[in-house]
Length: 313
Image 1 (cartoon, helix red, strand yellow):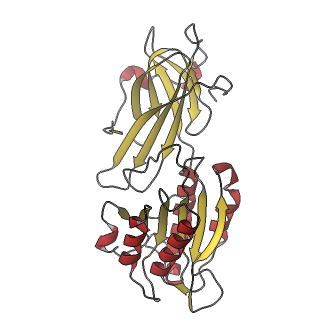
Image 2: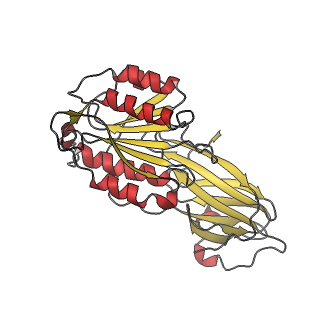
Image 3: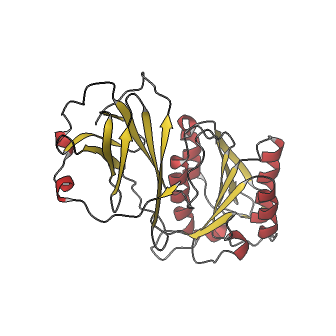
């Protein structure tokens, strides 16, 4: 993966370009297809292998402490729900996803972790996303015991190695257990573990090591807008070849050099050579919550697919 320095501005010629000029015909020959994926993960290594088949597990803390309000006003739990939905929408399409919730049962005493919906691919994640939004904090539970339960089920399903467990929690527990020990056993079994710490609680040092990330996450914006991108050519004259959305239709690009402009804040500009008939995917990890903000990107060359549609919406 290559780190890309954030660029604040455009050149004068590029700033004058607009998607309205995208009607110019491509150069003769078979066009390349260029698409963009923007991932908003929780660590600088969040761009996962595209062919991974081990599940991504979302563990949502729905214990009563999550009802506490954050400084912006929303509760810890609302912040966790929004972050979990955003994360679930950004996971690679072919990765299975499992949902677990802690403290969502009716009993007020300490509860075991609740097994929720599962989705084999992104196309089947609708019920899982609905369930994330439907779960409500009710009881108590041990986060350490929840990690043990998730690990055991992954192991029984022969899915522990290569899996990823992402925990959304305020890390406050009235039910005991050693979270660091449970995390170490899970990681030793071949899983990756990420903690998203909601609220003011500082995560223990064992969860801030490279094998597991704990990040203080403010509540995200309530409305997530699509990320637009465009493809610019400078030869024989500056023009915009096409426009699309990240995760949407690819752009048909004339063979040769061009620049992909991803409309992040600040915008990302990546120059590349586009081979005739080749599918090029620009995969971007934008991590603005780090100080300083961090952005990484890489090109993925996929096999040609003549049946795939190309457009410039």
